[in-house]
Image 1 (tube, rainbow, N blue to C red):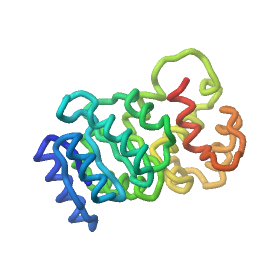
Image 2: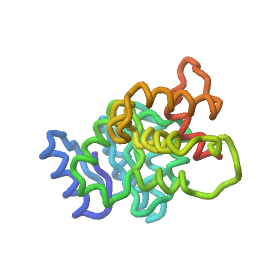
Image 3: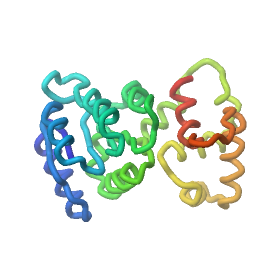
Image 4: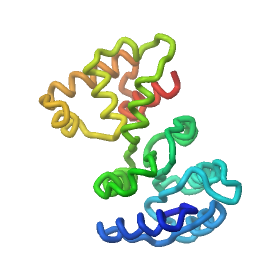
Length: 211
């Protein structure tokens, strides 16, 4: 399902996804209509603009939070005009499984959009590379993340985008074993021990958002 008050963007995204083999079961132009149709259709993924009517503020985000509470199996892919990681932090507060955040400009990038929808539908998480770059480059007080090496920060950035170890290895021209070592080191430096039910890759990203 696609929810955005911009008709051209909504229709364009629907056409791109349908051409890629997805079924778009409904569209909505405001947050109230989004919630009505979500409850009726229960889609695998809802693509939701952060700012929507009726308030034209963060109505889309608040609707997404309601969906997460009522229908946790529905994946949420937030769209935003600008990098606003506070919105992402609110959405991730209840867990990062099945959550994504993309800048609206990415809608025209068919491969990136379809890949994001597939990951979110499968229970994964996706962060826009520009969002990740800004978060990791933002000044903050010293903490565990400052102990990461340059290569480990590159690996963490790609982890945040939702990439697998194999994809990270290909991107950085490393072996998968080398990537595994970096990931293990990141977990250790961020004090993320193995525990049942926790997804350490997601927690590593959240550690930055909450620092």
